[in-house]
Amino acid sequence: MTSSTSSPPAESAGLQLKGITKTFGSFVANDAIDLDVRPGEIHCLLGENGAGKSTLMNVLYGLYQPDGGQIVIDGTPRQFADPKQAMAAGIGMVHQHFMLVEVFSVAENLILGREPGLVVDMKTARATVRELSARYGLPVDPDAVIEDLPVGIQQRVEILKALANDAKYLIFDEPTAVLTPQEIDELMVVMQNLRDEGRGIVFITHKLREVRAIADRITVLRRGRVVGQAEPGTSEQELARLMVGRAVDLSVDKEHAAPGAVRLEVSGLTVANAAGAVVVDGIDFEVSGGEILCIAGVQGNGQSELADALLGNAAVLSGRIELDGVDISHATPRQTIVAGMGFVPEDRQHDGFIGSFTIAENLVLNRYDRPPFASGLSLDLRAIDRNAVALRDEFDIRTPDVRNLGSSLSGGNAQKAVLARELSRDLSVLVASQPTRGVDVGAIEFLHKRIVAERDRGTAVLLVSTELEEVEALADRVLVMYRGTVVGIVAPDTPRDVLGMMMAGVPYDEAVALVRDAEQGEGE
Image (cartoon, rainbow, N blue to C red):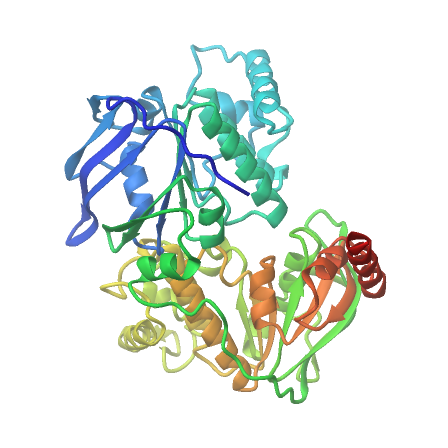
């Protein structure tokens, strides 16, 4: 994918942030940041989680008020007391965590906050959805209810909301964090089309490959400050160094696995989703201590429900799950955890972390009721705090105080905390579902090393990931799922073309033959 550059616009045209400073108590989130965005360009804002990227954009969007600095749009200084004023000035934002009312339809979400009077014109709202969908190649049913839509389609609705306000400058805040590779490719095309029609786009991300594929310009933030500018052709290693402030090993250094006894055995497992439909259909596999089995597949093929069933959080219709020889097929999540399973959920915001609890409290959610953190009905708050400080230091969880609310942590630090909590006790099995989703390269390097270290301790690791790079880097074996079934279990060095076909349901031998025939055809 290539990006086009545009000639410099007139000096007055464009969006400028001049010396933006934002503090939260003694913490300086943005420290005199300068940033400009030109019409007809994609300006990537790159940085670790907690670098200040989202805070800066929330200032621009009117969600936060700056403590210093100035916003200038097309030569005119502006101040935004709230997002409505920012939208009126031509600013649109596609949030990482969607700002949609889940029980409303697409059309209702589109018109929300833009109602012209007491009577809501739903006919016009539906027509607007259809017109924008057709114009920008973002097909969405106006009458579909948000909670019934997959995340990729929900993101389309977020984009349509911004376009309905005729936004001249669009902010995409970590837009690919919850998308499949196919949906990411589609989003890139949409962003390029918007750029080509003259809109200025700020693309916030930590994914280096995406930056190099689509950026016209790159600005790197680290700990609240601009630390450099880079060209799209800059190497991933150099971009990572700018982000983190040190050299980052983008590969995973691990020895060959030395599997021991089988610790997790799944046989004939059939699982239903919340609506009662079968989404995991009679699958078999096993994971031994000292190995990482990665489950690969396009999102939505039963991986999430499988992970939930292993924890005891989904309906098992038939089959058997054994942990160290003990049947846990119908155990509760609490019983499963006590039996020795660690669990990193794919959605930490909803299932892995409680933002209204302190960081220290979050770090004992799996054993708060047992010594040394509890005696009878009493909690030992000092022991809970000591545990949190120790885990903060060991796992590099960046917070000045473990008594701060969990919601104060950036995404990467929250994920470190979830993993720290699960690895703070002896485990038989670690189930990690999308463990690095929405996490920057520095945190990914750290999390990968800890997962490999857990394998080397003799724990059986089952890792679910839609990132093929992660699967290739961590797996000792790869199990490919398609529509709730196991297509095959293969080696991690299986060619990508073969894995891709298997992820579409093609058996291994047939996929190998198809790839071989295609290569021979190209060579003739």
